[in-house]
Length: 137
Image 1 (cartoon, rainbow, N blue to C red):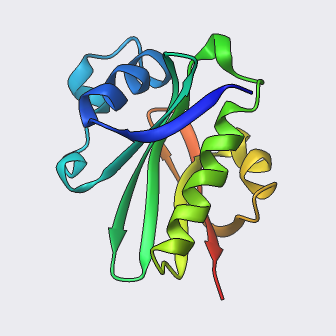
Image 2: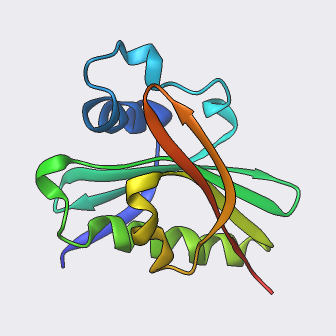
C-alpha cells in the first residue's frame, strides 16, 4: 500500500468531510467551532487525499471527530491505517483515553481497534451515535 499520513490543514479536512458526510448540506455545516484548536491528519494514496480525521486534546484525553474516507476509496484499508496512526499518536502524546461519537452502524469497525461502547447514545439529524472509547494503561 503506497500511502502517506501527514498533518493537513482544517480546510483540506473540510473538503473530504463535506463530500463524504454531508454533501447535501452547506460547507459550514461540517466545520467545527474548535477546528482551529485541533490537529488534522490526512492519508494520501499516491498524491490523492483519501481519508481524514481531526483530533482534539484536552488534559489526558483525546477526542477524534469527522473521520471520513472518500466513498470510492472505502474498503481498501485506508481508514484502518489512519486510525492505527491516530491511536499510536495518542499514546505517544501521553493520552490516557481516546474517544469518539461513532455512527451506530460503524461501531463494529471501531471495536476492531479496541474501542468499546460506553452506553452513551444520542441522535443527530436522524442518525444514531454511540460514544466509544479506548483507555490506555
